[in-house]
Image (cartoon, rainbow, N blue to C red; front, side, top):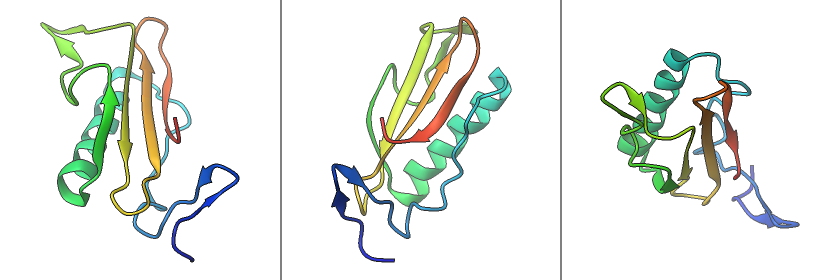
Length: 101
C-alpha cells in the first residue's frame, strides 16, 4: 500500500492503523468500556494522539454516573494522521468507533 495521502479530502489509512477494529454499534456500557480500553492501548502502545473529547480519556464516569449524555473521543494515527472517533449516547444507548469524525 502507498503512503497515506489525501484524495478528495479523505485521508487513506496507513499500514499502521488499517487493522484497527472499528465498531458499528456499541451494544452496552460494558462494550463501551472495552472500546475505551482498546483506545487506551492505541495511545499507550502505538502512540496515537488524543485530539479532543468530552472529558479526559477514561474519565467518563464520576461516582458511577456518566459525565454527559453524549461522550466522545477523537484519536489520531501518529503516522498518517487518520482520525478515529468513539462516540456513545449514554441516555438512549448506542454509539460507534469509526474512521473519521
